[in-house]
Length: 124
Image 1 (tube, helix red, strand yellow):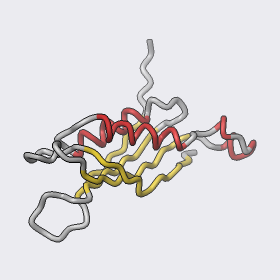
Image 2 (spheres, one colour; image 1 turned 60 degrees about the horizontal axis):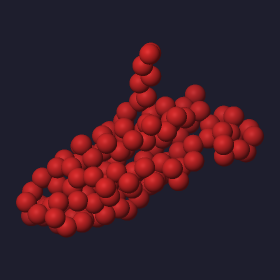
Image 3 (cartoon, one colour; image 1 turned 90 degrees about the vertical axis):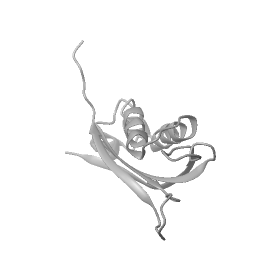
Image 4 (cartoon, one colour; image 1 turned 90 degrees about the horizontal axis):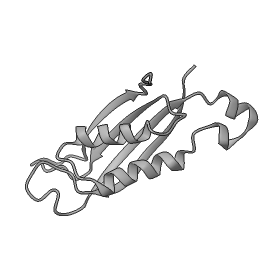
């Protein structure tokens, strides 16, 4: 069974981009997160300690967007996924990152990427 928590439309300012000047001034990004874990026990017991506290997921994503700089949206999304998978209960995460003011000569709402990553547990 795969259960999911969906977090949509997280707005964060960041300094990411490949073009000159994009990393000089903060610009808006929108992030959607979908975390996968087993919520069965939490649902039966109505106990936050047995599920994923999504405020921690949001804090991790915001920290990465705010405190780091990347040229590519793909790299930013990968960093967010890697950070979120550090939360023990999460088995997989889908990250969508949209740049809300893409530097293109067209009327366009956003440019973005989506990726899904799964936890890889390595034997010690």
